[in-house]
Image (cartoon, rainbow, N blue to C red; front, side, top):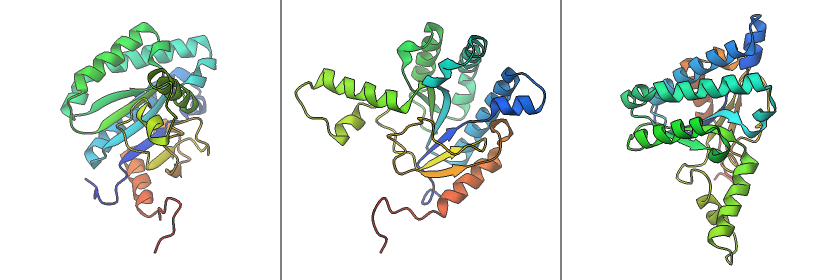
Length: 233
């Protein structure tokens, strides 16, 4: 358990490097995705054990539909199987699962599994895991604006009003954004919620990540001087 005083309230992770991990070993990309899923579960467990409150994982972006049909089909099967079989893991660790992204544009079986696991875990009080599936930051903002227009057509849009129409308005802003795999960009990840996030880039490919890597990232966050545009006295 880490000290809650300096602990990030919300950690986001861009889990990058599955394909390269597989290629480096002479394997097909699907092998990397399987290993990436194993790493994701280990990091969720580590986050729960560390006492983190909110963890957002970039699982499948709106741009990932550009990949080959075979890879997309494999990823959808992998996501569905993970959602179906991990309820006991969520229960044992009191993990609440929520979803960010355009649910209606996902295959119906994925929609069903996501809705089921969110309902089954809604009362758990430990770590909240936000799964970003068919998610894009720009797309979320557009959908939030459209919700506002539909509900309040004659009212000006404010920052607070837009916030209230995001996919998960109850989640706090992202304090720490981690990207693995050596790339240094945010790739349309929670762009509203990461406005003042501290950035942490790791050279390690995602399947190689462990609890120790997460702890190092959180320790790095503790040493940041956060002023949010102001001047520290």
